Every structure is written in C-alpha cells, then in structure tokens.
Amino acid sequence: MLVNDKHLTTIWYDKEVDKVKIIDQRLIPFELKIIELNTIDEVCFAIKEMQVRGAPLIGVTAAFGMYIASKENSNLDFLQEASKKINATRPTAVNLSWALNEVMTKIADLEEDQTSAKILDIANKIRQDDIDNCKKIGEHGCELIKKIYEMKNKPVNILTHCNAGWLATVDWGTALAPVFVANKNNIPVHVWVDETRPRNQGFSLTAWELINEKIPHSLIVDNVGGHLMQHNKIDICITGTDRTASNGDVCNKIGTYLKALAAYDNNIPFYVSAPISSIDFNIENGIRDIPIEERGSEEVSHITGLDENNKLKKIKIVPEGSSCTNFAFDVTPAKYITKLITEKGIVDANYQSINNLK
Image (cartoon, rainbow, N blue to C red; front, side, top):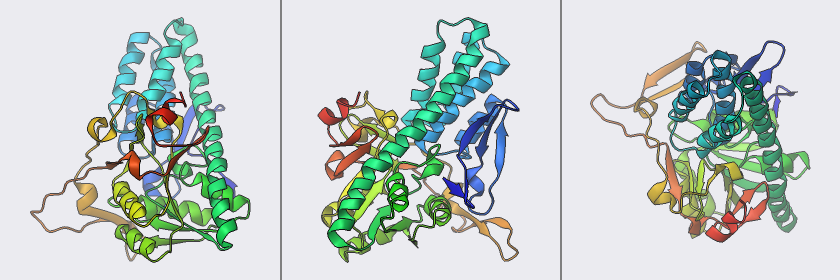
C-alpha cells in the first residue's frame, strides 16, 4: 500500500544484497524505519517484540527466518532447532507454526546444498500468496460494503479493532482490505478506529495507514463502539483474526469479543476477515483450546508518545504498587460472527463451512 504516495510492503527479500528487510512497526506513526534481519536471534526479537506483528506477517517473517537460519547452517537438525526457536516466540497466531511447517515439510528430503535456495523460494511464495490472498479478501469484502452503500447512498461507516491492515500482512491487509478496495473503487467509506489498548495499534498503525490512503476516519477510545452502535453510527464491523477454530470461534486482539457482543445486541453485522492460513483446523473449540498470549505488564503500565520537544518518550500511567495483567487476545464465539471473509469467498462461521475450505 501507499506511504507518502509510494508503494511499500512490510517485508521483502533484497536480492542485490541477499538481505531480508522489514519495517520496524514499533516506531510508527512517528518514524518509518527499514531494518535488516541477519540472524535467527534478530528474527525472534522482531516477532517477540513486535517489530513485525499480525498473524499473516508473523508467518511470512518466520519463513524468511528459516532462510536466514539456512545461510548459517543448512543441516536439517540445525534447521529443526531454529524452527522450534522461532515457533516459541508467540503462542497465539497459528500462521507462525503453519509457515514453519510449510518450510520443514518441503525440505525434508533435500540435500544440504539445495536447502537454502529452496527455503528462499518457499518464503517468497508464502509472501506472494499472502499478497494475493489479502487482495481477494478485499475484493470479496468490498461487495458487502458496496451493497450497504447502494442501500443508503451515503458513506459506509465501518468499525474495526486493532490493526488488520497491510501492516499486519505483506500488503492489503485482512480487515482493512475491503476498505482499501472500496476506496480504490470510489465507494465512500468512513472508518471508526479503536485505540486498541494497551499498545494503541489502532491509533498508531491503522490511522497511519488510512491517512496514507486518504481514507476518512475518526479515532475513538476502546469503549465507544457500543455507544456508536446504539445511535446508528456504524453500518458494519470488520476485524481480523490471529487464529480461527474449526467451529468458527475467532481469536483476535483483546476487546474484539466485547465489540461482537455490542454488534449482536444492536443487529449490526460483524464480519471477520480470515485468511485460510489463520484457520486452525485441529482446534474444535476456540475458547477452550486456543492458547492466549499474556504479555509484559509494562505495556499496560506505561505509554509511549511524543513529548513537548517532539521526542519519543515512555511514561508511567499507573500508581506505584499496582499490578497489571496483560492478556493480548480474547476469543469471540462463532454465534456472534455474521460470516468469515476468506480468499475463497464469504462463508458461515461453522464447522461444515470452514472445513470445506481445506
């Protein structure tokens, strides 16, 4: 998508220097910084500390991480250990283990001198597939937005949560892909952007994307969504997913469940953009079985922004002696989800429809 009117993606392989490059998303919206990943430790740090984030992008980064590992040592035992190390960085997003399994399965019978080149091919394919699939999700989801616009003949008001735009993928995004496609097709939209505590990914990332695409939007604190729904200011909700169970339960950024409850109570459609790589067909009950990442307390107790001298500064916002708990995700039961938007089309959030996607 666009940054200062120039096309950019979140991760790419620079053939000229044989380097994998990413955007350090921790610095957005205040600074656009491109960094190289040169070691397995740097890959693990990038995923764990959220230089890259979003389930699809984590998976793509993991695949390129295996290429970086193979340049150090292409022995299968070494690569298996590297895969385990990368997989341990974040427990919730299923794309991570999916991408690593794609790599390890396809190199199992190769000679060592063939392995590194093969992994690079696999990583580049996973990257391109992600771009293509997200574009298809955008096209399918755009049809929903188009129908609403044709009914009301006014800009379509869309609520999203967290960041499921192109920064969470390689390009296009998942939940925001329909918005981007609608905008490119001159369908007027307006996006309500949740702050998404504790890391404020709505305010920092989603808003930055929408500004660069020149899409009208309003920033709101996390608990405003229900009020807007009660007063007919939201036409449709679209979120992403980090892991979707085979029964249709959706695990996404903490707070998604509450938005779905409010949408259900106000008869507002609640869609989840779910690339098939984010579906865990082995999990039958999301509430019971999806592991929920618990991150450090400092994400809750501190906040980062620009000070009066335009310098990034982290400040503490809680009283000394208070403890903070930081669950990163929650699970929305399938019964509150209108449908899933996948690259293969829009499907019901139930076992039969989801398993037909295999």
